[in-house]
Length: 297
Ligand SMILES: Nc1ncnc2c1ncn2[C@@H]1O[C@H](COP(=O)(O)OP(=O)(O)OP(=O)(O)O)[C@@H](O)[C@H]1O
Ligand SMILES: [Mg+2]
Image (cartoon, rainbow, N blue to C red; front, side):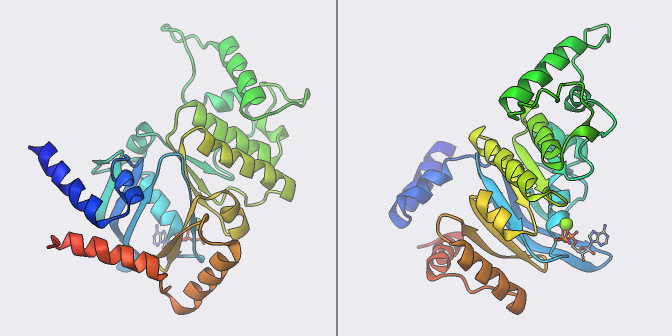
């Protein structure tokens, strides 16, 4: 029964929408937010925010200070509960999301400062909170060192002989630290990696190296949400950029279709006017969707 309804639904799409949109319908989204709203003490911080994160995609999230980016991230990571709206992981609605639950669902967050323990070695950082141990509780230290050494060589591309699994994080550059945090997330099979202002305080070369790690998330088939005040950084790694303005989504821009200059101009326009008139193409798509939402004809 459900099958025939789905088939019927699909046929309608085939008639009315382009083939690439029909294909997307069958692809499960690692994460989808529907009409999320959030207020703090009566002040609205997020309003009717909907967005989707696709598999193997780096989604850029930009907007002025106070636009609501970090609040949105905290909703995805279970720190805050939305007042309204739905969160779906792999197509399934999740109610009452907690930090623990978000982690179990494969969400990892990489922050500039908070992600690592500086006074501990790299291998301890990799396995922090999730050590390899024998049933009796003895730690498999040798194995954890070996895995760390492998990750350093393969995923992180650390070639310096000065760095070993026993090197303390305090001896790493900012870019190397961020790389370690990303590699850790990938090692534990995080499906969604959240990067909130990860380049803050990094030098130019460290930033370059770090942006390389972000590209590695995509090639591993995982997804990321990347927040950065620097649009150059976001543009260079993101597949799509969502512009948030005063708690609302002002627009969504695939980097394959918008140049950096266009995107910069759009962001300026959004900041000045509080809204962005979408290109005809996008509004036409919305009109089709709205029509279908009403049941079509
Ligand atoms: N826990 C909270 N209680 C009350 N107000 C909050 C809370 N968290 C955030 N806000 C407010 O919500 C708004 C959005 O904040 P948020 O941190 O999400 O912005 P942002 O886009 O991440 O900004 P920035 O780019 O400066 O990091 C701000 O006005 C902020 O003061
Ligand atoms: Mg923020």
